[in-house]
Length: 112
Image (cartoon, rainbow, N blue to C red; front, side, top):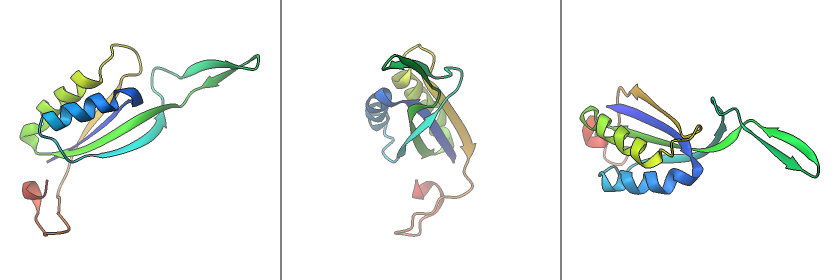
C-alpha cells in the first residue's frame, strides 16, 4: 500500500476531490496548511507599505491506496490540480506497512 500526500492550491481542491471520487477513490484526509516552495510567496501592499507573505495557504490531501492504483490516482491528481503556474503543488509518495480498520479489525487492502 502507498500513502499519497498532495499539497495543492486551495482553489483546486474541489476539482481534485471530484476527480478522485469519479476515479473511485472515496477515502481521504484533508487539511489546510501553509507553506512555500520555489514560489517564494507574494508581495502585497497595505496602507502604503509592502509586505512579503512567504507562507501561502495550501490544501493537503492524504490518501492510502493499493499499489496497483497508485499511478492512476497520481495522474488524476495532476490532471485536476494543474494550472501550469508556479505554486501548483507537490505530490509525495511513501510506503505504508499496515492499515487496520478499527471498527472491524480488517487489515491490509481490505481495510483500505
